[in-house]
Amino acid sequence: MFRLDGRTMLVTGGSRGIGRAEAEALAGLGAHVVVGYSQGETAAREVVDALVAKGAKAEAVQIDVADTSRVDAVIGELVKRHGRLDGLVANAGISVDGLLIRVKDEDLERMWAVNVRGAIACARAAIKSMMRARWGRVVFTSSVVGETGNAGQVGYAATKAALLGVTRALAREYATRGITVNAVAPGFVETDMTAGIQGDLRAAVLGQIPLGRLGTPADIAAAVAFLCSEEAGYVTGQVLSVNGGMHMA
Image 1 (cartoon, rainbow, N blue to C red):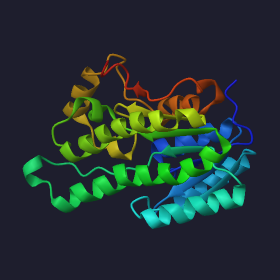
Image 2 (cartoon, rainbow, N blue to C red):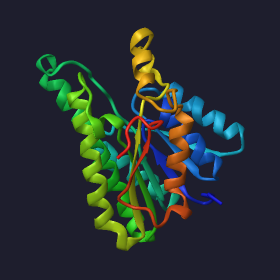
Image 3 (cartoon, rainbow, N blue to C red):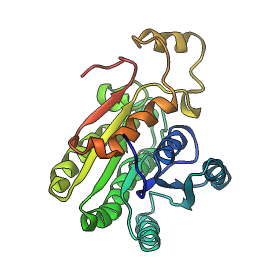
């Protein structure tokens, strides 16, 4: 069960945190994993070296998802080199937090460019190859705050909510081509982004989570691995919330 032998899968934002765990999980299922990174080349190379040392197939590519021409070029080259691109995990994302009255236009524009426009650009380029093969998996990384909202994260919440609409629209567009499109919505996960949540604030967050702990990158990666698998072929247009029970739709 849950094998991806012979499949080529691209994970954007794959050099650390949740993205790294996703790359590791997909490689563990036999996929050739392409670790996409924007600036962290050293970290991306470390991920690839660790996977290759375990006998997996992996490579790293520099891809700034906010640069749509670069996205088209990189994914086009991947398809040319491998003859296919079977899966996309659109994980790259940024957050600039702050109360709305202090949020700058450029911060909103940057989040939109990376979190939404970048994810759509990656999907558009990847789906071209998937359509020819009549098989594909697209998984977007949303967030619990895209489902519930969160004070001080208006811009981030807006972008992550937008991905839910993107997921459902694309699922309807490409289902007849054998392509599934889903999203994962992580809750609070132990990553660099949540490292600053300490003391009373951490206690308050944990108080909202029935399972009583923050998630791990591996928790999210397991959900993504399922959605990318052959066994998830009848799952599309769905949002898999991995949040310890913090939000129950």
